[in-house]
Structure formats: structure tokens, C-alpha cells
Length: 117
Image (cartoon, rainbow, N blue to C red):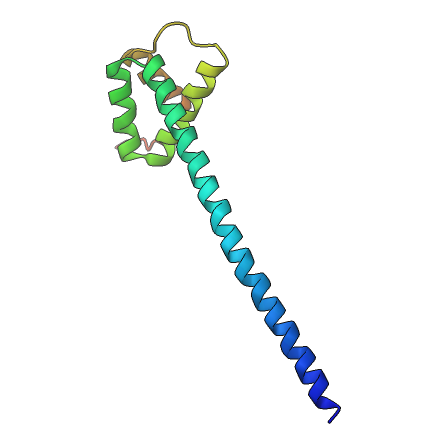
């Protein structure tokens, strides 16, 4: 009969642990939702900065790059936003300046020189 109180105690501990896990899942959902909302606000703010500091041609070029290379496009967008927020951009970036910026930020590409003998 001494096993019965231990079994009851074990069952109580299991129930308590399950309740804690349920509460974490519910709380975690709220945190994830808040995090997603904050990310959407940051993206909207970044888009507003890009609209303010990029000409239409530069924005089109950046969007074309982002479509073909999403990671690189995001990196360039973050860089332009950082430059704008630090006050290092005077006026707007036009398409030629965007082309130069893309070349500057592009990782070194290996080129293959094929020479025929």
C-alpha cells in the first residue's frame, strides 16, 4: 500500500508539468506574435526609408536584385537604411549610384579565365 501514495504523488507531478508546458506554449505564442508584429513594423519602416532616399530607378534596380538574390537584396536594403539613418546620404540615390553600391557590396566573385594555347 505504500506504493499508492507515491503513485499519486507521481501523477500530481506529471499533471503539474503538463500544465506548465501548456502555459509555456500559450505564452510562447504571444511572444511569437509580438515578435512577428515588431518585424513587420521594422520592415515597413525600412520600406519608408527606401522610398524616401531612393529614386524610382534605383528602387526598381534594388527590387530586381532582391528578386534574383533575396539574401543579397535584404543586405543591401539594410545597408541603405543604415546609411540613411546615420545621415550619410545627401539627397536621393539614383540608379547609377545604386549600381555602384551594388558592385561595392557584392561579394567577390571568382572569375574563370580561360586561355587557349
